[in-house]
Image (cartoon, rainbow, N blue to C red; front, side):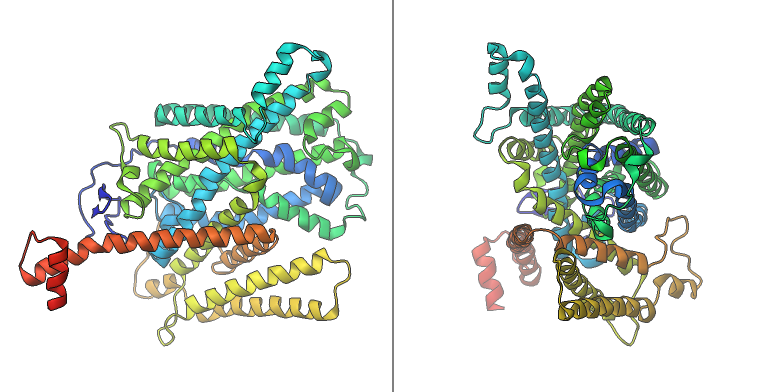
Length: 572
C-alpha cells in the first residue's frame, strides 16, 4: 500500500487500504504462528489475574459485599463471559492480530474500527502504564514497612529518597516498564518463555493463597453472609467492581495472528482462561472472607494483612513478595499486544508505516519502541487515579463493539426492511446507557421517588422490547445460507444464544460505563473525539494520491505536479 506514510506490507486478508480495495498483493512478511494453546492460556491468565485478586477481593469484601464477596465475583464472571464468548467466536472466525479493531472493521467499517483501536490502546498501553505505576507504589509501600527497624539509618533514608523522590515521579514504575520493553525487544520466543513461567508462578501463588486462607477459614466469619448494612445492592455493586478484575482475557485475540490453529485454539484459550480466573477468584474470596471478619479486612493488602492477623506472618511475607514478583508479568503481557494492534492499523494506512516494520525474526521493534516509550513516560509521571475511569470506559466500549460485531456477523435485516438491524442495535445501545444512568440513580439514593422508579422501569422495559425485536424481526444469516445448501460455520466455535447473549453483554458493559464518574465519561468522549479528528485528517491526506492517480487515468497525462493535476481535474 502507498499512503503518505509510504509502503507497508499487506495483511493476511489482502486488504490494502481502509476500504478493502486493491485487495490482493503478496505480503512482505508473514507473522509466524508459534503460540500453542498453553501459550495463549498463559497470555490470557497473565493479563487477567493481577490487582483483582491482590487488591479488589479485600476492598469489595470490606466495603460492599462482606462474606458474600464470592457471589459478586461469580456474577461478574458470568457477565464477563457474555463478552468473552463473543471474543471466542470472532477470534476463531477472524484469526488475525487486532482483536476488536479487526472485528469492527469487518462488520462496521473503518471509522468504527478506529474507535475500537483507540479504545484498545487505552487497554494495552494505558493499563500497562497503570499496572506499572501500581507496582511502583507497592514497592515503595513495602520498603516503608522497614521503617521501624531502620530508624534514622542513612542508607534507609537514601533508599526512600531514590524510590520516592516526590513531584509525582515513580522510578520503580520506570524500571519495570523499561524492563518489559527491553524483554519484548529481545524477541518473541524469549518473551513467550518468560510469560509462560510467570503465568504459572502467578496461578501457583493465587492457588497457595486461596488454599491457606480456606484452611484458616472460620464458620463464624461467614455470618451474616450478606451483612444488613450492605444488602443485596451491595453485592451487585461488588459485582460491578469485580468485573474489572476479568479484563485482559481479550488479549488472546490480539495474539491470534501468531496462534497455531487459531480457529480452534483461540476460543478454547478464552474459555479456559475465564474458567481458571473465575475459579481462582471465587476460591480466594471465600478463603479471605472466612479467614478474617469482613470488618477487619484490609482494603489495600487483604491477603498479607489477613495472614498476619491470624498469626501466620511467614505466609503474609510470601504473599506480599509474591505480589511484587508476579505483577510485572501483567505489564509485560499487556504491552505485548500494543505493537501487534499498531501493525494491523498501519497495514490499513490508519497509522504510519513504521508501525508495520518487522525484522527478520518477526519482531515489531520500531512499534515496540514507540509504544514502550509512551508507556514508560505515563507510568513514571502520571498517577493511576488520573487514568482509572478513562481506561475502564475505553475497555468497555471495545467490549461492546465486539458484542455488536457478533450480532452483525450472525443476524441480518429483512429484505423488505434494509438497515432495520442497525437501527435497532443503535436504539438498544442508547436505551441501555439511559437505563444504566437511571438504575445508578435508584441504587445510589436512599429515597427514590415514584417518578424515578417509573422512568427506570419504563426505560428497562423499552430496552427489553427492542432487544426482543432484534431477536424476532432480524433473521439469522446461518439459517438463510443453510436453506440454500451452504454451511458457512463448519468447524467454528459459535457464540450460543445469539443475539440474546451479546445483547446482555452490551447492556452490562453500558451499565458499567454509566457507573463511572462524570469526569471519566467526559474524558472518554473527548478521547474518542480526538481520535476521530486525527483519523479524518489522515483519511483526507490518504485519499489525495488516489485523487491524483484517477486524474492520470482520465487525462492520460502522467508525471504532473499535484497542482497541475488538480487544475486538469477542475477543467474536466
